[in-house]
Length: 142
Image (cartoon, rainbow, N blue to C red; front, side, top):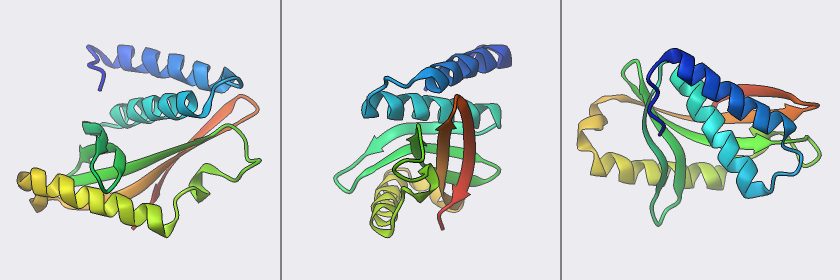
């Protein structure tokens, strides 16, 4: 989680990440995923989400971003695709992956009991890159 001093810093960093992704034809899968998660974190921060945790891992699985906004804890899976050749980002989470995310979220809630009083939301941040254009969508999974 990057600390930003001003909203201008946040916007500048987002623009840099956007540029890297839009031009990132030679990125490997790990680099693409990491850049996508950074863009998603920036996008959420610009939209007034408070980032609680990134890449939370347990033996059950991983949650890419855990955030808070308007009395709700959000558990985000981030999927980034640089083409639609192998499907779209919003098609990347199946029932098994969703179950892993939910089991991992339960562990996080048990470790942070004070958050159990808030609403919970499980969503996908789908980042689709086509012809240098980037489309970001938040899609509820529950």
